[in-house]
Length: 321
Length: 269
Ligand SMILES: Cc1cc2nc3c(=O)[nH]c(=O)nc-3n(C[C@H](O)[C@H](O)[C@H](O)COP(=O)(O)OP(=O)(O)OC[C@H]3O[C@@H](n4cnc5c(N)ncnc54)[C@H](O)[C@@H]3O)c2cc1C
Ligand SMILES: Nc1ncnc2c1ncn2[C@@H]1O[C@H](COP(=O)(O)O)[C@@H](O)[C@H]1O
Image (cartoon, rainbow over all chains, first blue to last red; front, side, top):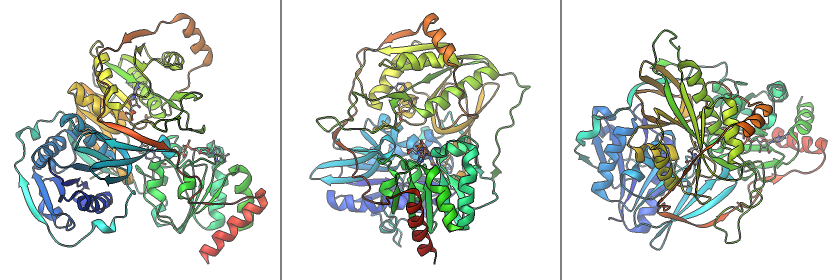
């Protein structure tokens, strides 16, 4: 086993995801602590152009195959597993994203390495890697110790700043031979599907009024719409509102929705699960109204109100008209 | 790239009926305040109310939709605990054909240990598809569906929102960030982590649940010789310090509304 930190580079349509730079920044810190190298694993059809964006790494390990152009849980696992076997890193850092969920857990079984998921922090304490995870919708934090001397940490997007992970320059690129089993997949990737353009683009709005399950019924949505109108903003929501089909998918903020960065974000009846926080935590001003004083949204808001939204919102709309 | 739309489901194609298994997890109701136990390494489970993991409700609904459309069967599976019977009877009332209770396991098992248990339980069941919830609130060491797929040696795909079946082929949508989706195809057997069913999960009439509690039998399977390890241990669990981020606004509704209006107006000016 080496003391190296291996970051799995996530990319979609040949663009490296933001979260990868967050992991690389953290990985750099951890590599300093362990005295190892920072390695970046690039699984793709052609690694060079992606490697050019990974200047912060000491070395890029590429596995190239046409089969790796798009994510496929089976071929990506085969490729990643070969990298991990060859490099035997101290820690594998992977994003706890849609792709990372498939990849991290299956790597854990494949290579018999322990895994801690939903991580918001990783620190070295002497020889031990300590991982802080956000569990129970963000209401409880847990500190895990990796018992083995090598392991996988699956990290929530938005946990670290991306800037420290961005650096010009192309590190040394080592291409590993693609394992023969790579194209032996039972899942077949067919296509990427782009979202339908909607009536509004919430990523471009200055002011957002976000509704969550606390709004209780579709019939109460006008309350939020009137507030948004008084502010000259738009309405967006958490995932359950979209799953209930009360609002269109293009209004969803979060992990599987859109990332927004408005000047003002007013969260009405949103608990603040990590998957929601990931999409809005960079808003300049966050005001949260939630009856539950232990709701994790208050960790991230600038101002909080533990009152019934149905009492506060009409009064607020009146004041802003 | 293709534009987003839900599958055009082909009514004409002959599709093989599928036997679907839905593992259900009971999780603490997050509306309640969660407290930490005495040694500070787990939540205090004594007075908690448990409910079905919300994504499992979606997995079950999707399974029932597939069965109603193409035939086959739905088996629900859950570990024994105080509230398991009610959740399983509710699933039967919604239309599941069979309910299996797995006995003989401690509380708070890791996902790794659960995957071994489920793998064992599934070896006695004839299945084509396993639909799990995409994740559960108390999971710390990874998503059961993925671990299970790998343990069983069958493919897995997480964050699935749409399933269409034609002949023996499944077409699946996996959600990425920003509303982008990937379309995959595969054949059974496969484990899918369901994010959302195609329709809002149905409710079970309470009278029907009560009736089934009197009439229907739950099957029981005893777990044996499971390696409970996950390779990680919890050193500390804690609740984050509340409101550290937010300045809390107090007063009556009018006062609070005025404060918020001032804060926003100042930001906007
Ligand atoms: C892979 C994956 C991707 C996901 N992607 C997203 C995503 O993109 N976006 C997203 O939002 N979620 C996403 N989720 C779901 C996420 O985990 C949560 O389930 C979701 O964010 C919860 O939404 P909520 O806060 O509206 O509902 P809840 O968690 O149910 O919270 C409702 C809140 O309303 C409060 N409330 C109730 N009544 C009132 C009242 N009268 N006044 C004031 N407050 C009240 C309650 O105290 C509670 O805190 C994803 C999950 C997974 C697994
Ligand atoms: N103890 C359990 N009993 C039955 N199903 C489970 C259990 N734990 C996890 N699952 C299933 O696996 C999914 C993902 O859970 P988790 O691995 O805890 O994130 C859940 O939504 C369930 O479908």
